[in-house]
Image (cartoon, rainbow, N blue to C red):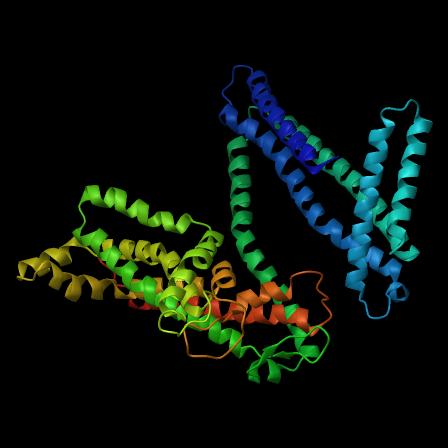
Length: 485
């Protein structure tokens, strides 16, 4: 059964349980006042049907591919791996062949629907499987074809078992909640306790997700440093990957490009964003602020791929016409550090302005009134009272914007080029850590080679950098934040 159908069936069972619980408490009370409102009895039945079933469904969908992959890999063994290949590439072939067999069976069943009789349908499916095996078997070994059949059979069995278990939990939970329903049952306490557990689980998802990301990065990073020296990764000034061997995977050209582009982006975003925040909070009237602030924040909703196209098609050619061969002669192509930095700075303007605006508005009006009472002008009040009071929060906003700039990918890919170099010229093409992570994992990556595993080492380095900036920003905000009455 497809997962979508199973999910809808569980929802239908929970909905039916909700109305059944409400109806049962109305009939079971016998005129006595029940402990809780009827809605709580309905929610008690619905939650007992919905939560366990969906939890098992989610865990099963995550665990089943790992179990099937591990079993099929053990079945293949080392003898099925050709020379020069890896078990990961062989498993990719197994999954591709299994998908082909699934398509063949589906086509066979569709064709058999026009035939009459079970024998005709079975014969048609077998013919389709034979055709699929002949079509795929020319480039795939018999071991891989057998493993694909095992993969398909295990997946079908697991899906059937999942359907049975999930439906049993949904029906059993609904029946349990329905049997609990009585005038004396404390349904409100039960529902509120369940909601508290659900909210706790939702809060833990973010923590567990972060932990999972860190553990996956750490494991593959350790594997990378086992086959490639850490001294060369952190000590070499050359980035020259070669999947044929002899790669030089020094991180410093990528870090330099990342920091250089982020620095230019902050030079654009911080002054403009801060000035916009000061104007909106101190000078703009209610009508101007009502439409100017939403228009400014529209920039935050534009996808980064659109910013990348803007850099590639508009900003790059514009800079080339001024600084290129026909102009000052400093720029060789439209893709450069300056191109990506300018566009990334435009993207960060609403980020800086929105946070700074909220921070400036948090400064009490009494400070402004006191400054005006001493004879200071509006500009003097802003420079000597408001900005110093809001400075810790503004610094935190700038650091958060810096971490956002460091992790940007699409603008860099389309606007900065792909050259890994150490250069001070902002009109040269460079690349960043995020862009190289994408390029190293594009295509059928062999995760046993340092050229592919280096992406995880780069990701771990980037994670540590952005985490450090975020922690430092929170430290600055909390340490120097002024508390006003």
